[in-house]
Amino acid sequence: MCAKDLRIELRARVVMAQVLPFGVLVLILFAFTLDPNSAILPRIAPGLFWITVLLSSILAVGRSIAVEAEHGARDALRLSGMDGGAIFLGKVAAVVVQLLALELVLIVATFMLYSIDVRGLEVLVIAAISATIGIASTGTVYGVLASGAKVRETLVPLLVLPICAPVLLGATKAFESALAGRSGEAWPWVQLLGAFGALYLTVGFIAYGTLMEEA
Image (cartoon, rainbow, N blue to C red; front, side):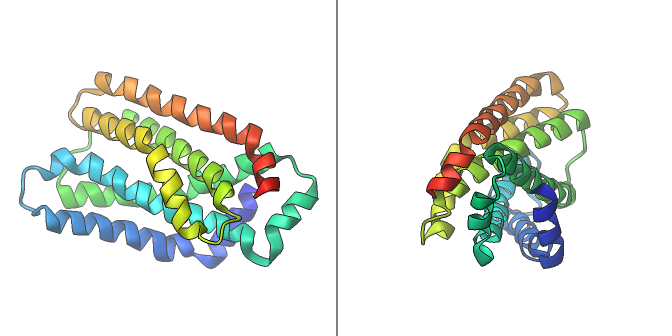
């Protein structure tokens, strides 16, 4: 499932051609709006970065839903006899890979635009992976809930964004502490991110097959 979604994305290049430019554009607009010469930019950069990632993830999740909606692929999955939990993990893995590639470019752009010194790299990497798993798991769970609705393009953001508030808070605080040289203060937030991701991975693994049948 993961390999299938990634192959489709490599052919369509939606994330690279649309989601990535969207994310970079949001970061640039933030920088211009808040004045590039302002000393406040390095302090608020972690929050701006994760807001950008969260908004971009909605497009990536929407693309993941659209892949299954095309040519009756969702019905084929239902009839395939594949375990719902396995399908869920595969789709989450595909979204995680795409988001991590996106985040790598966005973090470099953030450091360049906002003049940030790189510190606490280990914390940044672990926090980013944990947060990305949480976002991808949440988006996949609520994406399948909205997949049968005619207004799924607008329904998915309404469902996912409020639920991902703990991820936004935890990832921002972890990045703030790490970049300020206080890595010890970042670990509790990383643990929050890990717990959130584990919760939605478990919920999705158990419930995805049933949700897919009812969607």
